[in-house]
Image (cartoon, rainbow, N blue to C red; front, side, top):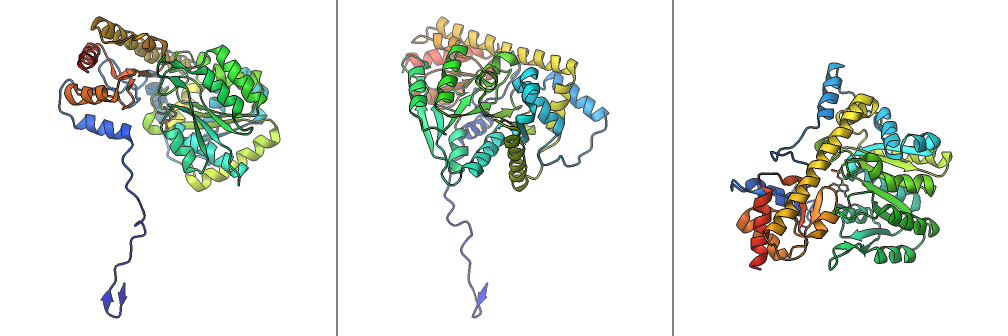
Length: 415
Ligand SMILES: Cc1ncc(COP(=O)(O)O)c(C=O)c1O
């Protein structure tokens, strides 16, 4: 800008932007990729790898893609709420056919940008309904780091509570239940539907029933983060137990934030869905309209390709069976790697007891190593894991599991 013949530099619009360090897990992946050591091992990011440490395109997904392309793929916009056949099939899948059929008019759904987008949209909806006084969001410690990020960025007060007892390496159910017993009515509780990230420890069905009973009695709202359904045990119905119990047996309103990143391996396609099981048809209809209005100002329309892949699988009985088989393949390989890591740690006399590894389930192992050990494993042995010693078990295979177990044992012995 010229004033009196001199050029004045305007201050940057973004001058107040602070420097925020990169998300640690993504930064770790970048470090791993830049490492030229041939035996390097990536146990950081939670993405499934096959026996050759490669990304795996599920056979059911490959067949679905082929079908879609053969049928003639076009690239038109989806409706604002996303692909209708995807949304209804997802709600039916998550709730089970009978529960879905008995409540379909009280259900609102919106296709989202994977699980993250689903949590964010759920937060936006609740915020728009609860303004100006936002309820507290209760989040387990530890948890997936993005929970705090998403809900605090939306202005919700976030309250952490202890979920994991580091001494016994078990779920701290007493603290969990007493937190629920003292939470303000109307608070939101983030529930990991299965495969708690990062601890790999889920409540048993009986414990879920107790959690649900207190939540219903105290009017606490269940917001299920369901990023690992079917991937945890290989059995979709088993992994969806808590969701169905809350909706059907307890007859509670719930928000389900579903991701198909892990269980269909559609990470980069951003396939997700928000499903609301509400108390009345009117609430469902109105909530649906608000979801569409919020979605319009955020992204206008969700991405089409991944949703078509997922819908084609869910609609076709044969493809669906093949997907269930893929879920068993992935969860089975992870379970066998978990056992091999455990055996390797014991065989190499890694100090301490490792039974907790076998108590955990899902994609992650929560090892309980000190930060010093984690750093040394990276610097000396080129083994990369999250700072809290959460390892993505899918990064292990028959060629590297012994190296990892031996390295952990060596570092710990010299600690
Ligand atoms: C607990 C949990 N919730 C949600 C997500 C959502 O992931 P995405 O946005 O890739 O679906 C993840 C992914 O790591 C997760 O671990």
